[in-house]
Amino acid sequence: MTSSLQPGIAAEDSQQADEQSIIKLFSPEAGATPSLLSGSGFTYRHDWGDRKGEWKLFLSSRAINRNSRVFVAIGECAPGGGKFIGSARYTVHNVAPKDNGVEIWINIQWSEPIRLCVDYFVVNP
Image (cartoon, rainbow, N blue to C red; front, top):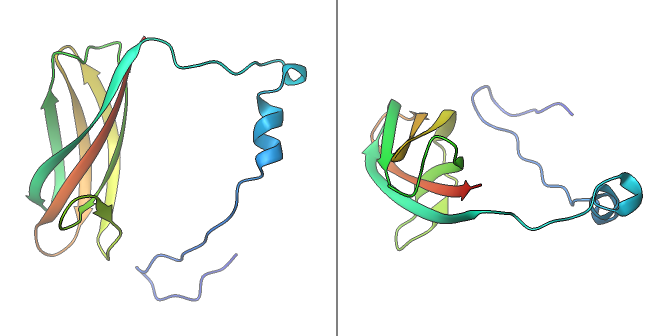
């Protein structure tokens, strides 16, 4: 698919997942069986304040260690809670769990500082 939008403007698309394919992926005949996540974990949203450009940010937490599985989603904080997609481009470059915290490397492409919210999903096997 080719976008006819101006350079620097993201094209948009929305598609429905093929639910039958998802079920087949986890069917016994596919050689895998569904299982619950094992271990302990948590989710957490952190407001890092107004930022622009590249940042390495360390979130300190005794509940995270070097063997934790940490997934992050970043975006612009919405007034009153939540996040929204505006015109700024937010990207995650790296996520590195460490003993007592996790470091992320992010970039916000915008001319002025804007609010950064980071959602952390942590699983400790």
